[in-house]
Amino acid sequence: MTTRVGIVEVAQSVGSESKDNLYEEIYKISKEVLDKAGLSIRDVDTAVSASSDIFTGISCANAYYWDSTAAFLKNGSRQDGESLFSFYYAAMRIMTGHYNTALVVGICRGSEHPETDSLTTLFGDPFSQRPLGLCETVVAAFQMRLYMERYGITEEQCAKVAVKNLGNALRNPYAHRKRRYTVEDILNSQRIADPLTAKQCAPKSDGIVAVLLASEEKTKRLTKKPVWFKGFGCSMDTFSIGDKDLLGGSLRDAASRAYKKADISDPKKEIDLAEVCEPYAFQELLWCEHLGLCDEGEGGKLIDSGRTQIDGDIPVNPSGGVLANNPYISRGLQRLVEVVLQLKGQAGERQVENKMKTAIAHGTTGFAGHCHAVAILGV
Image (cartoon, rainbow, N blue to C red; front, side, top):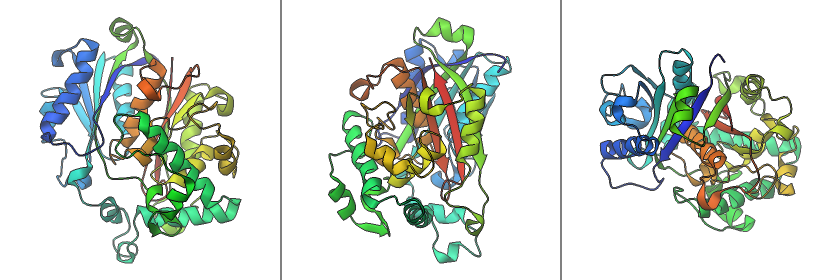
């Protein structure tokens, strides 16, 4: 990178259904992040938003909220898909030297769109896959069964992820779903698609997220606690489910690119915290393997060890993760927001006590993790 990009401030809405008008909520969160930095809309040089035509039911889905995000009459762009891409687009704009500040806004109103599985059937081929009823949850069930059979991962180990994350969410005022559960509670919840049970599947949540980025010089002037963008990687898997290795995927490639840019050679030792996008509980174990936080097939042992607990040596999802809060479009960007709060020491009751220097924000979308994005942040 030719210039450092800093994350100045972040803001987010709660995951439960809001009674506010969507325009008002977008405006409120955008204004909050600017107020924290002591800036006005005139100080925003460019804007990038993350929203979806499919999940909002509107083509050109940024057309109706653009002026609510401090983007009116400014050079901006919209990203449709995994919202961490919008963060990277904004960072690249600053790295060109043409902009000193960039506002990134992720927008999802889960309470107003149809059931997520109804929408994700649209991801499949219209002739060979949609008529079968294939959706993210069904494909995730295939993936979970294969993961358990290939590596000896147990249902109890997968359920432990939900116990951990939904328990962590009790400390998170923004979380949608939170409660103290036992492994038995998780496994005895409604069977959705064998072997997945209801409490191992993410809810459908609201979520407006805002992130203010700035050039290095500007960042140092705006905050005493900057968080720096260190690396990014992304990758996509093959489209057809029949051509996929459900346990292979593209996350390893995305992580490798991010680590290379961030000069990380041993993530097991150099990563202090991870916010991982786990729409299904078992995926946290699988993604930790692909992120290099443990060896292949060792995800079950990792959760058993307690190392990923909020007081462990590599906390994973101290916010509660996507199992606790799942604004589908903005969830990857929300992982980044949670990492920033942790690195700034501003995460409140969910603040990790360990000293942290480098952390991962991860986002994914599509069947069995079709697309992955990884951002490395540090102080």
